[in-house]
Structures are given as C-alpha cells and as structure tokens.
Length: 174
Image (cartoon, rainbow, N blue to C red; front, top):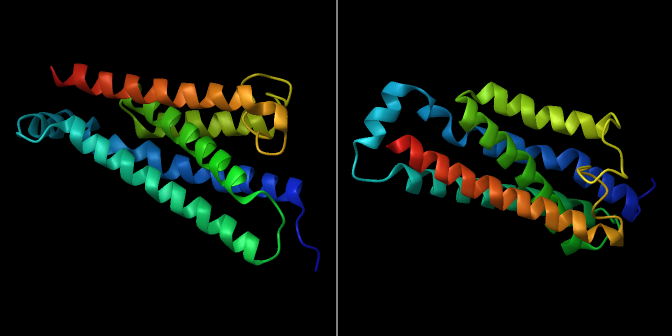
C-alpha cells in the first residue's frame, strides 16, 4: 500500500474536505428567508445578528474540527505533509466556499442559489475553467510557497463577505 506524499495529501484535503464549508455555512440563515419567520424573529429582544453570529461561529468550529480530524486520520495513516499549514489552508478554503455561498444565499433569499454559487465556483476550479495561473483559482494553495498572496486574497474576501452579510442582516432588520 502506497502512502500519500505531500502533494497528493494537499490535493485530497483541498479538493474533498473543502466541500464541508458549503454544507455547513450556506444554510446558516435558511430558516429566516421566509418573511413570516423573519418578522417573528425580529420582534424578539434577542437580536437576529447575535443568532447568525453564533451559527457562524458554530459552523467555523465544526469545519475546523472536521478538517483537523480528517487530516489527523491521514497523518495517522502515514501521509506526510506539513500538518498545520495544510489544515489552516483547507479551513480557510472551506470557509471561503461556504461564506460566499451564504452571502449569495442571503442576497437572493434562496438557499439553493447559494449552494449553486458555491458548487459552481468549485466546479469551475475543478474543470480548469479557472486554472492555476488565475488569481481567483482556489486550489493548490497549500502545496506552493508562492501562493501567500492568494491566501490573503481569499481571507480578505471571506472577511468582506462576512461583514457584508452582517450589514445586510442589519439592513433587512429595518
């Protein structure tokens, strides 16, 4: 049985485990897309933004623990790779995919559109419509040292999407 080297481990982590972010982040505001439920929630003293923040935090911790657990299992089975570097990159990519889908879902008030956005972006990267030389290409970040600029780009985009999402939730409250 052949163990995975660092490049194969990175591909396995990035291309398979990063989909967890889509599954966990996109439906965070799913229940409040209905106007009746949103009106009921907005009339309560507990703010909707706090609820969404707690859900986002929970999704982040779940993504982090699932990616870390998967990487730990790979490490236990003698896959050789820089553990924390790969895990942090895959967590970032998972969060970016999920948060971008959540943002589109919140704008369109439809979870299916959010899933299609995130999965469509993932498919564009997998089918080489967005290739490795492109700035917005998602994968290959953990296996190349010169990808630090792209990592900061995705981190900045994720933070921008989060702030925009919370601002959008505050605006919809009024």
